[in-house]
Amino acid sequence: MATTEFTTADGRRLRMASLTAEFPHPWDEIVKVSNRVLDGTVPDELQIRDVFIAPRGNADGILEHVLDAEVTQVLQAREGTLQIAESRRSDLQGIAFWRGPHHEALVWLPSEDDGGYDDPLKGLSGLAFTDRSDGLEIRPDAGQDWVIKPGHLGMHVPGVGSLSVRPAEDALAQIPAWAGQLIDVGELWQVQHDDIEDLAASTYFTFATPTVVANLFPERPDPTARFIPQLTFLAGLSRLTLS
Image (tube, rainbow, N blue to C red; front, top):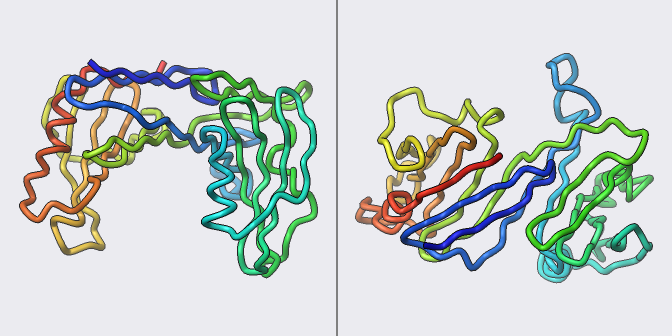
């Protein structure tokens, strides 16, 4: 049996076990950081910042292959460094990231064409990081009152596809209205993207457990529409929990 565990930014543990698949790739995470309870009185996007967590070294690939950028500032920080990278092109974004011994926490910076930025470290300010081999925990700095929640956890499963996991309390709207098929970890639905007519290309799978809601996006379209690798993986899941 293959197993994988990951500590989320708010200190919870995501655990997954499979009888049919291996997990050679690490988890990544998008963290939602807000300074108040979201109550609908102010647009969410105005009071939330997204922090992207990935294994150490992930930013290097973004700099080289996505942004055509280079690191322009490196500052010492607790347990790691703060780094700022700017693109050589005015139409591309930059990034600011905290780099620890095992993981990185990254935020995007507006491009020069979009007005640039005044404080490149604003997206990471007021946050403290505790980095371990199994995940990066984020907490507010002393005197700060940030609300920190996992927004998305992702992993690539070779030969199967991309797995996207969200806490159940934040993802109930993803669950289809009709009854699904029961599997060992919960309930499963086969669904299609509304804007793609090709069944082979539009199909993905949603499944819900008591603590998470997850989407599985096939690695490649299946012209037979049988999706045997994906259904074999889902049938072989013996655990997917967040607690």
